[in-house]
Length: 336
Image (cartoon, rainbow, N blue to C red; front, top):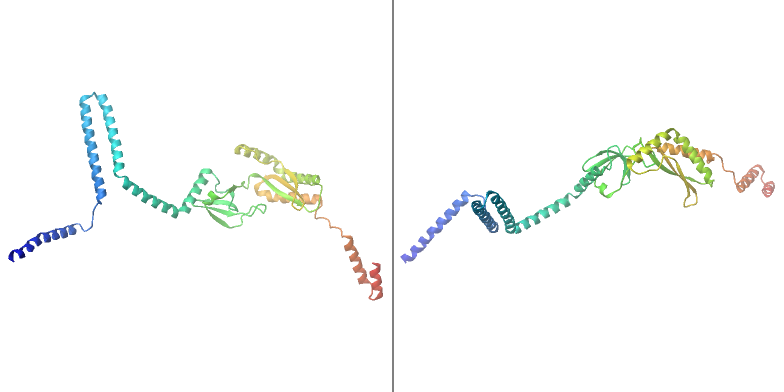
């Protein structure tokens, strides 16, 4: 009985000592620090590979230095060093391949989430790069983008600010409203850059006549009105047209006035006119030409004659008002 009771006491002593040692180690290292076994094995194999290659390189260079002349020794040393570097790179890739794949998958997931979260910002930045690289427009240019016509007053990395202008043919003075557009629309929309206000540019408009007229007579009236309106700037416009065509590398419409005749869907005569004038004066020139043509043709100046039926009805009403009531009124109506 005494021997049996002593054995547990003797066995419990080492266990309590182990517990105390483990508790002391936890106090010394309050934070758990460990390396997974797989990574630890990879580190061990990597260090062993580096040491083996370093040792082989030293042995090979020592052997070559003893048995070859200096020039040949340098060549062989270079070959040994290159072979050791290739073996080291291939060995590291094989050892750490699984960890590299896991890291690439994690990095890919992070990049995909980042791209999805910042898609609009990336498109805006890409639009800014397109504007800058393609020299689309600059501050002061008049553009038409997404159905909005205006003048650029500011542009940045993510947005472009323009002052809204009225539609074509309604003047060139700003409406006072400011529109801020994201640069992403430059990738999906069409950008139209117009001529500057002080530049000469072709302008087209259509003149539709309600009543039939001789086409040749109307064309002559339009050409005469255009010549009288554009005569003061004709020479300067011709020089600017040559300069613009030479700078752009292709020919544009102008500087002479062009008139063509056609018909509308209802059979009305339509005259399509192209004039070459200052961009800021297109509305004034168009109105001057149209008014001059209408005056020359006499449209809207004379009163249309009354129809025969309307004249008869007017005369009958006058006689009925002037004739006394009764039998005389019936006779007046019969006479009318």
